[in-house]
Image 1 (spheres, helix red, strand yellow):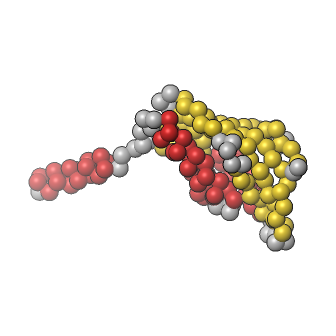
Image 2 (cartoon, rainbow, N blue to C red):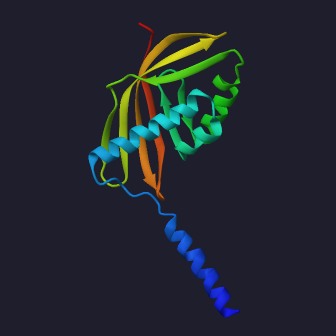
Image 3 (cartoon, rainbow, N blue to C red):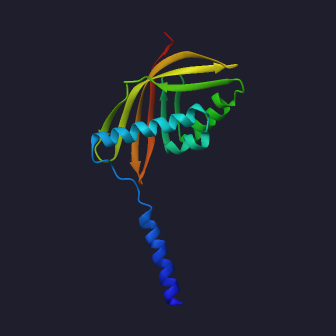
Length: 162
């Protein structure tokens, strides 16, 4: 019986070692690849209103600052706002797209990264999509407990389509 208990404990311990948490990338290029891939994955979920997936990209204590929409505190509040707002409209859809060549990643030595760039927004209404605006953004990504999450989001300099 002791042998079986010991084997079970060893199995559980070894499983924990196999589920390694992410570590901070060792090169700037690896960090850039990681952060830009996370941004793309987060906004793929955003663009289709997959709120269950989208919320996994944020810390619980998220702070979202929007120059037109104000401040949203906590990821739960952001998801609720999206659920009752942009994701509640049957014949209306918002899509965010990064403007190519604008992404920049800045290391926050060993614990995070800043991602900056410009993005465009498109609205599809009754099957017809049109560019509605452009803006700049800055995202603070933190590596906590082996997981990358957005902690602070700034969306600013919004302008209409030109």
